[in-house]
Length: 386
Image (cartoon, rainbow, N blue to C red):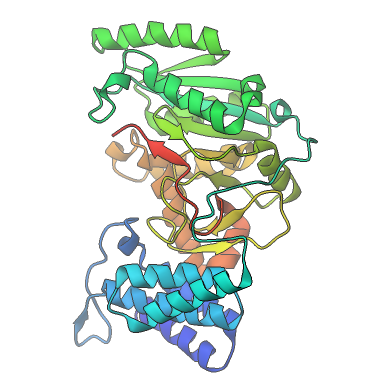
């Protein structure tokens, strides 16, 4: 039997016996076989289920798994997690009446309970206790290259540093001026044989670095993976804030000290991403759960990995994740080595494989990936690049 059907059948069997936690794990394993429906992988080919006929899994199949997951989560009183699953089911198959029923039930239960995790709360009013000196814990790493002329944000295009200035300015606006006191690396992937734009941009970056206190690191035609791999050994702090040069932070202020405080308290919490979309099941976030711990900030556990802006534990990235990527890159096509996918795709696929093997909770205890915020919170970053 194909694992998709086997995992789903095991989940249904556990659910019928009232073994709710086991059912959740089986349904999570099933979803880990299907990330293509969320834009996270290549389409799954047809497969033979019993040697006699070919079966192609559809979005409707995936929606049914989300409905089953929502049903079990509701049994356990995990209303917000049930809401996430029912929203995904409804988006994948709007004709699924059960998805609509669970969506309405979960939404109603949240409104009745007056939960602080509302569908569009968009706020974080949790303050740091003041015990964290950010500069002792965090290094800002911004990576850049002389991108071509942008379309939507043409006025920000290199060789000026307007794009970089917009990103760094929004970083300080959302996270506070204390960011400026942290160690800061500006990593430039430079093409020494490039156009005059490259030369002009290089000079502009030198001026920007002096003005804002960045340590400028220059690499030649390295790509994102090699640039980050080369710079990580210069980091002395326990955490990095990884940002590419074309993100605009938005929304209410976020207390980075509170996030660092939670990561200090939980050694298995390794990365916190700031989402470019509403906090719901979508894309690489094909599994997410509310973190119910008493914490300084709101978080959602996720199965995803991303090059989007994130706070990352330095030792995890340097000692495990980047070496894992480096080993994988030696075994695959060379054109992947210079792309952004040389990091996030490799880690995501390994993480999904671990979920299929150990379940979401077993895998998450190792990977420790989170999204900042509450269920339904709006995007915290906008991608200015293309």
